[in-house]
Image (tube, rainbow, N blue to C red):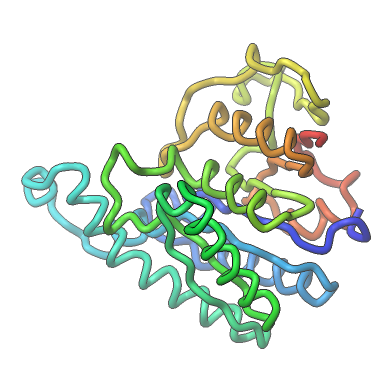
Length: 262
């Protein structure tokens, strides 16, 4: 499989990067960076779409409930994102530096994809980064976004990035193994390994959101179907599994995932 991919986008959700108490899981971040570095050494260009800024900022600030009650949801998101994005990127810089990899931050908004000129400006920036060996780390600029102009979640953002940058594959890492034919909590439910073009999977999709992020399986599958329709392989897999990225690309028979065929 690896021979066919020379550029991939990897989206990591907040529920992968945070612990149950909402703090950043540095051990998990380190393990994912190690795998991304292995893929880079194998000649694959990586674009990382990383959530986790708001969760990171919330845990960093330690605000009392009485303090957050005085702020509306937009103010909270802006504050936590401003603090958390700096902490998140700082950790990524340190972890990738250990592998001799430079990273660059790309903060974007939905309106930046609205016109050909803005879209091309983003594309050229990220293309220049990749050409000079810099790994782009993308997130929504929550500090200036307002609710009606926000992405649905970073699943949507990763899909736009994968298409804009002409990636061969998009890997969406969540905290479950993929799409099931029933509730993932039901032992009788079975993982759907392959979704072919035109297949209707709506009956299997729950609109339940994750605890840490804004998205859920409904969002992930909706984006996966759109991106696959554009000719890009899409994989939904469990980012909390050890070596999930390298196993998925190099020995896919060893790990569970759902593959949306282009």
